[in-house]
Amino acid sequence: MTEALMRRIREGDEAAFTELYGHYADHALRIAMAVTKDKDSAADAVQEAFVRVYHHVDSFDLDKPFKPWFYRILINECNRILKSRSRIVFIQDFIERISGMRQSYDHNFEEYEALYSAVKQLKDTHRIPIVLKYLEDFQESEIAEILGLNLNTVKTRLFKGRQKLKKAIERLEKRGEMYDEQISRS
Image (cartoon, rainbow, N blue to C red; front, side):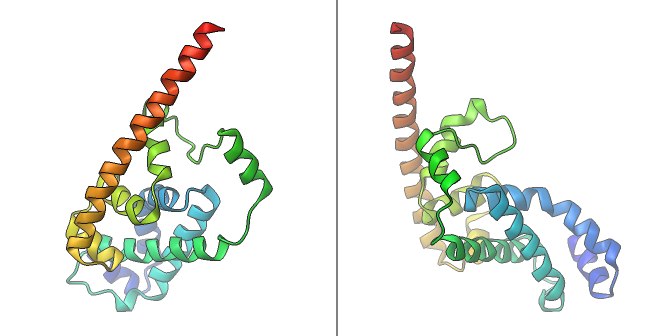
């Protein structure tokens, strides 16, 4: 299906591009939010990724799957935005981080709060492969292609990421239990 859309886009069919955008935009935004940890940065990355797809549609090999090509562009855009914004500290972000009240997602993830908090704590080298594997269901070989890494490097990062995730969740749950005990004593 995507390859047919890409052919139509190459031929100048704007409706095909709109259809492609509609099919991938929500998933792309979730990935970008997980990578950038910021809704505005994620939206910028998704928009720029689609602009790049549109401008470089002729470089896409129709014999290869679209998703790894697209997500590689998206991850590169996320990294570019993070790098450009890494020197800027917004006072509101600083205050929200200190208060622990920051929520990057619009959806209600209360039941997965510990998991999402733990994922956000991971370094990019572990968080991005984890998100691609478990949120977007990419195979390790596709993640390697998207990130431009060796397959064994991806497997190692996933393994270490899962270990760090488990420890982070355990710490967060323990803090939650201690907080619940403090409230019950009050």
